[in-house]
Structures are given as C-alpha cells and as structure tokens.
Image (tube, rainbow, N blue to C red; front, side):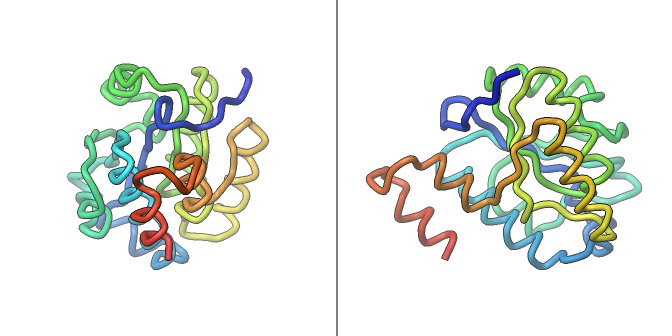
Amino acid sequence: MERIRITRDNCFLVGIDYQERLVPAMSGKEGLLDASARLIRGFEILGLPVLMTQQYPKGLGQTIPAIKEAGEADYIDKVTFSAWKTDEFVQKVESLGRKAAVVVGIETHVCEQQTVLDMIDAGYTVYVAADCVASRKESDRDIAIRCMEAAGAVITTYEAILFELLVTAKAPEFKAISNLVK
C-alpha cells in the first residue's frame, strides 16, 4: 500500500488506553501526558476527529483527567488488545471515511502495536507520534516503535504532525497551534 500524507481531510487521531491504573506505571509518563494532551488539543483546534479507547475500564479505570480534559473525543471500551479487533472501534473508524490515522497511547508494545499493525493490514496509513507513546519499560517501547516502523508506520512527533496538518503559517489556526507547542 502506498503511504498517504496526513491532511485535514483524511486524518483522525486514535488515543489508546490512557487509563487511571495504567498511566502511573509508564516510563516517562510526564512527557507522555504533556505531549499527548498538546496533540489532542491541536486536533481540537483543527476540528479533527479523535477516538479514545479504554481497555477493560472496570478493572483499569477511566481515561485520566489530563487526557480527557485536553479535548472532545469519542470513547470506545474494549477488552481486545488491538482496538481493531473490537467491532465498535472498526465501525467508528470506517464511518469517518478517512484513511490516515495518528495512533498514540499505551502500552506501546501491546495495545498500540497490535492496533497499528491491524490498521496497516486494513489499508490505513498510520502515523505514530513517538513522543506520545509509552510502556512500563523503555526497551519495550523502543522495540515496538521499530516493529511498527518496519511494518510501514510513519514514526514522527506530535509537533511535526500538527505543522504538517497546518501546511502554512497563513492557516487561521497557525497562531493557536504555534502557542500550543511553545
């Protein structure tokens, strides 16, 4: 499959499992939460769709406030590691009619990696913001990023994604995005 560039017309964000009982165990959680919240806010500024998953919320809790308060999102509960194995998620993604996904969240080597690989197999171009992903162990995170890249994911950063979506400093949202990343 040929990679497509992300644009405002074809892009959406998927946030994986930023939950109360998972986030505290993540390596580098402060940077993860800061970058992830900025990316979500940026998608809201640009008026782009955001989907958030929650892995077994009865046991792992809800999405943490720092992420939930960053912007509007549709929430989908799941018990499968890959969100793509949850019918509600697939239906929601397909209903968007967009083929470029930015996928972020935790844990990089479990739910995120499996979701990314399944979405690539389903014909989506997937971007992973490396500064918006985490695992308990850095080695698991780093190897998962390499695995996703080898499978065809585009590895980048939240700031690069937001400026790629802006295209030009003349975009009406440029000032808001510029202030967001400072």
